[in-house]
Image 1: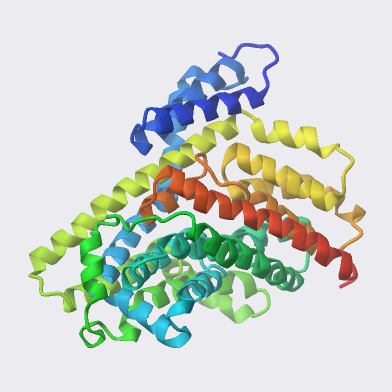
Image 2: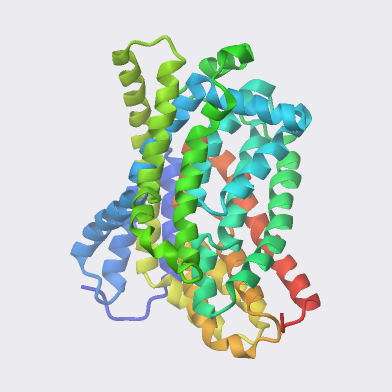
Length: 465
């Protein structure tokens, strides 16, 4: 039973941060083990200080949150492991990389990856984009022989930026709906806000940090560095064709994008309602990525001299790797969920809601602090939207800019309590330090650039638009 006296959730946050640093950085425990222990530790603190949080909850809520996160990312990550393994070892990823280089030139390899991830993240969730683009970044590194830091940053920046700014991506779509702002205007303002943020965080910061941090190509996603380098030396004629190589990505994007389109425009085109149940099935990310995985696995089988049993064993090896990644990612989500249960979100928003600063800046600040405290960008955005919605009438700018400020704040400083942090680390084959210097840094740059862009645009665009 909780002890009934004043306790600041901020203390829980500080103790949780100290615990996760001790477990993961100082003691260097496996990420899954360290995160689960940290989640249990936060659960114990909650049981002592949080009303209606029983001691039994300290264990059961960790398991429940882990299960909820696994339900959301388990199948996609496992299928992404098959896609990554198959595209890398069949030569499909290498073929796509060479196509990019032919179109834009070898010196613009980073721009090709950046542009692709930025566009893909509009209809597709961030995690799905990273699953699909990470093998291309690894193959690009094997092909070029350097600049893996840059390639990881541009892929992450492109995907993360449109994820929080441009509907029909679910986060900004839900915020726009909560605030009651026109979707078309939100999309236009979102694109205008996303492009400078993605460029600064991806291309500019990526090229800067690439000169100072050389991340080696490590074995991950059940594929060794030697295998990638061997594929990089193959003649293009021995690789799969461009369409076949791109097919897994195209299938995933088209299927998931079809669901996004139907959900967004069924009121405009009532005829879409007739096919919506079928699109809801094949456009579900679990089904879409499974279909894409089967296409990638088929190409892998056709273009490698493997017996069926060997091919099956290769896919099983990929699933083993994917299972570890899924477990770590879900554990990070559980740690964030237990922090949220401490009341840190309400505590922070309660302090900031009454501060007399401009609404745009206030919305960004609330979303940013909630995001850092509890980990989830979407949760931070929706929490802030609920707080700010009653104050929309006080705005002297178009409410679409309020959506942008909330999205920018919700994207800041992805760290240990964000499942996305662990996804990038594990799929990219990075250390914790490398992930902080690339992924955490770029999400912060996106947030700050998004705020500045929002303030500038809102000062020159009339509120009546």
